[in-house]
Amino acid sequence: MRPTRTGSTARIESTAVATLAPSASKIMARRLPRLIPINDSVVGPLMGLNTSDSQWRVWHTALSDGTGLPERLRTIREISGVDPRISELRAMDVVLWMHGKKLGMTVAAAPDLDE
Image: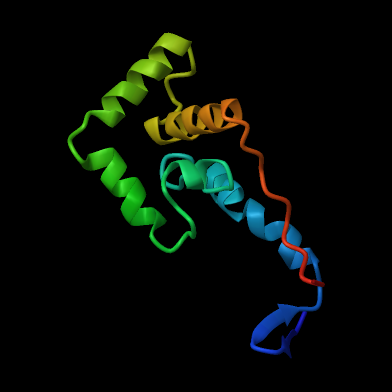
């Protein structure tokens, strides 16, 4: 997989990398569920994220700005009967995902690098 230049845009010849790219945050979140939030085409926009550049600052602010979000997420987790080992971060992923789906948002397909 070597990058090629087409105009000013670097492209990767193999689409295998492109297929994996959208799943990277989900894979990381699966391996480190108390540390890594999911950032996809449903959750990201709901958090005000157009790119992943500022995601850590946005997540940190949301969970530590004194608005009580971690406590509300804990309450949601308890009321829903979810396993208590599920972190507030993962509960937030689920709540955002469900809200986004209710709004009609869909997961973006892997980018086509041949275009």
